[in-house]
Image (tube, rainbow, N blue to C red; front, side, top):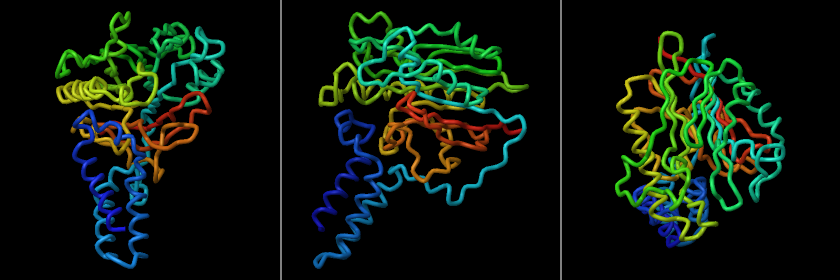
Length: 358
């Protein structure tokens, strides 16, 4: 038992040191986050029942729980966090990875292999049902049979579906807002790439921006204030062009692109004096050290969630969380909940109610 507990402690220490820092640790990073709390608890119970080295094994199991429990995805904040009631002019925000937009029966493209048929009308009903002032939507893109991204041009329908809303789009990101958009721009990762060879654009691509722009910033005029909203979809650790999960799909290019996306996001937020909201699909579980690169100015909204183990993916059988929301300290989070997608996506949506400090 002592050997098993020690082996797990070595893994946890290595994970905390290497995760997010070196590309070749990406496979161990895919461990279910809850294992970092569950495994040491099991080891602790087994150690207490053991005949030999009971105390040593228990101490080692407790050490691994102390080191890994904080990144296991457990959210103990609901035990003490009490939300402040929202004012009448609170802002309702909805962030969601749409799973290739409305690509399904009735859309311009058939559903990709492995995705179920979806009702396009239901897709828009779902968006309307969120009753949001600001919608931050990811995967505004179709995919061909060869895994090639295809631009979506659904702006006319969005204007019909959401009259009076202002719309910004960049790469595979689209933001809808009841409030006027005074600035919009996609954040290109290339200035923050350590090596130009790490830019994940396939040769011959007719849409390089899909690979290099993974955050859309929109500054919204809300009353007399301007607030920045960052709509992000950080690259997956798994290279989609590899066709599956193997050592080729977990490569240095993917890792460096993820870091560059976080760095360009951090640089923009650090230089931005405005209150800000950051939400989207980070493709990072609570156990992944790359979350250290989230800009230090941002405050995690997780304490406002009521779930003890919030999970956003896979929406059908939620295992862990890869969708996140942050705000600057000038913004109060009055409510935060995860919204199941009713089979429309493999991600749950994130719904927040926010207000600006007076």
